[in-house]
Amino acid sequence: MNKESIYGLTFDKLTSWLSAHGHKKGRALKVWESLYKERATDFSEILDINKNCVQLLEDHFTTTTLSDHIKQEASDGTVKFLFKLADGNLIETVLMRYQHGISVCVTTQVGCNIGCSFCASGLLTKSRDLSSAEIVEQIVKVQQYLDQVGKGETVTNIVVMGIGEPFDNFDNMIDFLRIVTDQKGLAIGATRITVSTSGIVDKIYDFANTDLRVHLAISLHAPNDELRTKIMKINRAFPIKTLMDAVDYYIKKTNKRIMFEYILLKGVNDQKEHAEQLADLLIDRAKYAGVNLIPYNPVDEHDQYQRSVHEDVLVFYDILKKRGINCGIRQEHGTDIDAACGQLRSKQMKED
Image (cartoon, helix red, strand yellow):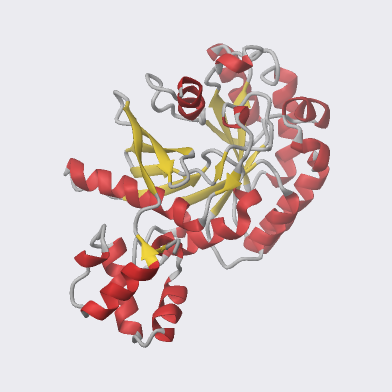
């Protein structure tokens, strides 16, 4: 019998399952707390429940869906994990240290079909979605690593920006969010989580209609349709006007800010006119919009793109600020390892 991962169950689903097998709600709470607060790695480590319940869990569930394959540690404290899934596929997860805490970037798919022309994640097309359990266990594995390091650190922030398009795996991603924000377990605050999408418009509407208070980021990377279509083929299906209509609905429905991600590509989207066009696009939404300017991590397979000159980045930034657009330049992490998302996975699969 193929066992389901215990990490794929929300607390309500775990409670219902145990109740259907003759166990009270209090037992579900004990199992939940043991997994997420005490970080039990095996059902036998769960104390204060009877042996029959332990055996029942062992017969139907597993606590391991991924294993360590490669770990790269950067001089700035960033750690990139290459995990192997049960079916042999590889995924990346990144731990980043900030003054405000420990942030983890999680992957939602094996490969990516969005096809952004500058991105290492899309070098290998999507073979499947990750289950909610496989996404949750990335957080669990990183927390176990922090426990082993022994500095008392805990995961405080999550960015759903790894390999894949989160909104292309919407239901599993939503279950993941409900599991990691549950106050009885990992208790990561919803306002400390950001989900990034390349712009699947119908799912932006769906996301706005959830009760989650998680932040939303939009990978924009160009201020007009012609340029965005050249570098992001998703723009053919969801052009900027359609995308912005969804953004406006999200803002009205949630009253929350949206971060627009903008990777700066030398001579492609980093000129003064691009900054002015971006300001024009966002000015009516300036109260709710921020721009995250991202230095490009060059990828060998996409050698047509280069990192923008630092002076051009500053000029771009200044134009946005003077036009009243809140923006910042992303702090880089892990520059002395395979920094670009998907780079380590792609390199390892070539070597294998």
